Image (cartoon, rainbow, N blue to C red; front, top):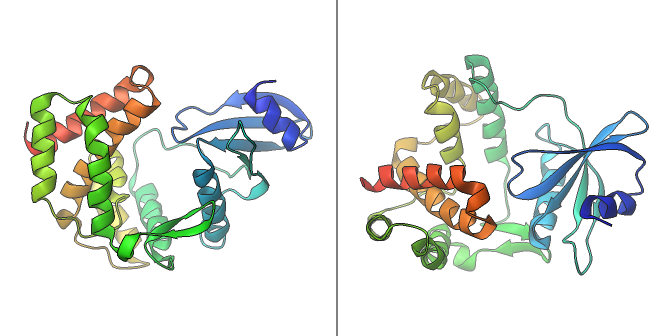
Length: 255
């Protein structure tokens, strides 16, 4: 029995058809069309910590943001990390140009996400909330970067790798809101006007920090991490993402 059939059995679902969900990089995701006419999604994270992290975060976010409802949860076995059964939410992927109205809405929801208070720096996991060492975000970034250097060295050209190391050692990161890198790369750089509308939406909920002081560092750090992600997940099937990440690194270090 293959993976998705095992999950369907665990959740006791009557399924009419199964569709793969493309570009679900951090998990395996399947769209399940049920005989009842309902559509649900089965999400299978690559490890159990991620399973529990997403489950608890979705429960937390459900009162603040329009996220999928967790319909069922399976903690897994010796062979499968587990799975979430999620409701369908209305909407379509943002694959085209982000107009001003949508950029404003993204800003609002992003600010609401940042308004959620966590007990400490850290993440939810299998054993509950996992606190960062000394509650020190910069120490976490430094330690994580050091773990990434060896696998990254095996992928990057030597000159670029050495410039990345020097760049990190001279950089200063001051914020945990690393997710601005994705907004910048995939929205603002594609449509610079969208940044104005995003900022207007974000500012209706909370002030927007001075991004120019944090984006260069986190853009670099995110791309360096992505190179290792591509190596671990398979360079051949992630060639485009690897090429994009290397391009960001080259731009960051002036190579």
